[in-house]
Amino acid sequence: MVGNLIQNELMKFFVRKRTWVYFIIFYSIPFLFILIYFFKTGSAWQKSFIDFALVFQLSFIGIYTTILAATTVAEEYVNGTIKQLLIRPYSRTNVLLSKYFAVFLMLLFQLIGTYLIAYILTWFFTIEKVYFSLFIRDLLYALILQTVYMTIAFMIATLTRKSALAIALTIFLQLTQGLSSFINMFYPFLSKYYLFGLLNLGQLPEGVSLAWAILVIAIYYIIFILVTFQAFSRRDV
Image (cartoon, rainbow, N blue to C red; front, side, top):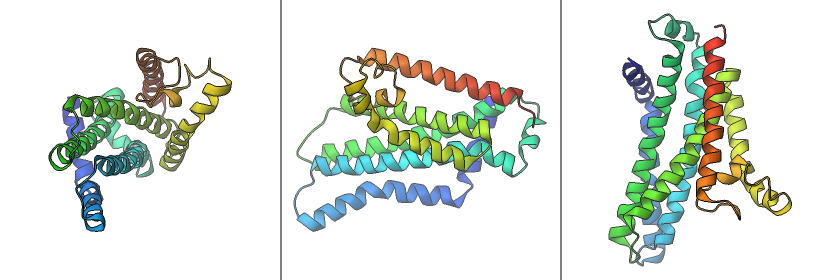
């Protein structure tokens, strides 16, 4: 039952021309970076340049997924179609769950494609070789980080019904990751619980283990999900 709803949500995404335009531009980025580098230097590709293209793509993913998560619920209220969804023989939980998983699948599709292309370019066209396991690790780290921000945007949009507010607040929270070094310096005991300082699993604050960071992130994530679904289930439409 939920699978059909997820399929419908994905169809809503892909029926839009802007989705296809985005993916064409998005997956062209690493190749454009490589062409620019080659024609500018005329030398072999460097892994550092591919890494730069990867970071650039990840920022694209963060912005696009935030917008998608914020608008998928809020637009239903703005367009007045939320009542049509809820009169169907589906529970509110299933309706919201389908929207959440549809956005998550879009995120997963982008991340897998991004890291797979980066791995292929690195392995076949650079002197430096990187083990596939390292790419899998980085992919999982990125997936955790992006999923948390996606969930925050989804939660804010569900609570406020305002996509612009959800997008602005989520992007602002992403910028607060830089505060982790300040907190770690002056309030080291708080750095173990500061969510946005723990999301960079590849560079954790001093004294924080990977297991602890994942545990804290999981607790925050569960809270965000419970708040989102409880609010949506109890709110009058």
